[in-house]
Image 1 (cartoon, rainbow, N blue to C red):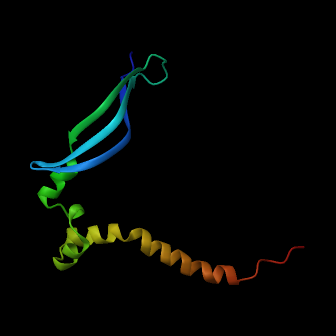
Image 2: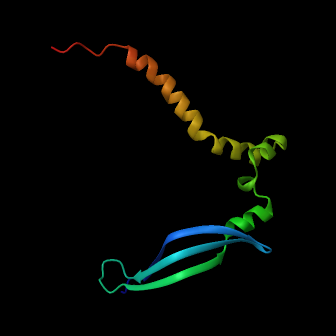
Length: 114
């Protein structure tokens, strides 16, 4: 049984550009590695620059909750918008809660060493 070949692309630099038909992802100095994991015969292909249509541009055009601004989510409350707001604010809120929980833990004395 032969293992499937896999491919990985990496780029040294990249940026997005807005075009008439949506966002375009521009990758510079790109390399693509293809081969079977565990074997040494990988094929390496180098590119100077590559332009690809960005899927993010398609999401923006569709009006997905992930692509809307925070103010737009707050001003039009739906279940999907509320879920997106919770998802966006999960790290700051949990960071604040953990910091507040750390205060009483720091103030308690550790058991005395014997």
